[in-house]
Image (cartoon, rainbow, N blue to C red; front, side):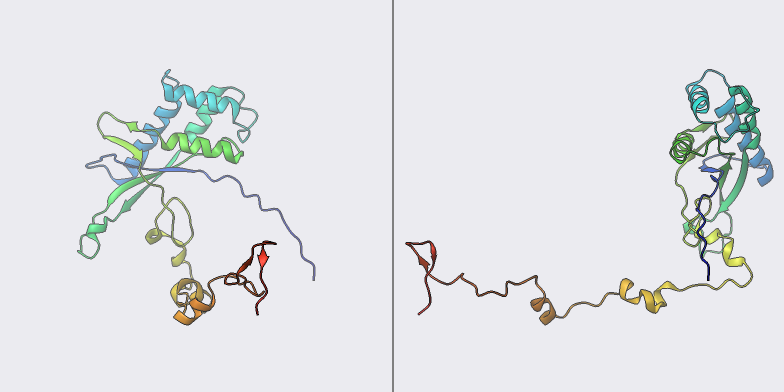
Length: 226
């Protein structure tokens, strides 16, 4: 048998953040996605002299190794990233609605964008910077990052466990971790009995103790027992 090891080097993923707080009264989901994409693009790439715009341009000047080399200027890079923005709306169910029969959800919008760099530290800085921005609008309130998801099934960041697509995969077998014999000792460790605790209080010195033996005042050593 031959074993071949291949370096694990996945490409950087495009997910940026999840925004909440925008208000759309009558627009369908698709229209709200288009409008949120415009809000995000204008805030990041308008080159209007704002602190946010200037910070974006400074970052891209030093971290654009994942951008096609034919795009040489910061303006070209900004246009490229602007066009790559994709928004996906999630209609989340409020905790207080669960079990009440009210299926109306409250919305959130996932933001995806082509990663400008493959440097993981710089990419983390890029995501954290955008997650700290409040995207203010004139008519649709403001959207901001409130909490990043961590799916309990696949560990992805762009959806909660109840919206994970993997359980719908044909042949998927749900796992009940609490019933796993391999995890039983970890999840439910046995409680030590009283006599076990008494016997396992720590390492003991197997040599004869001199704690109760009188000192030989002349030599500073314990006097021999009679």
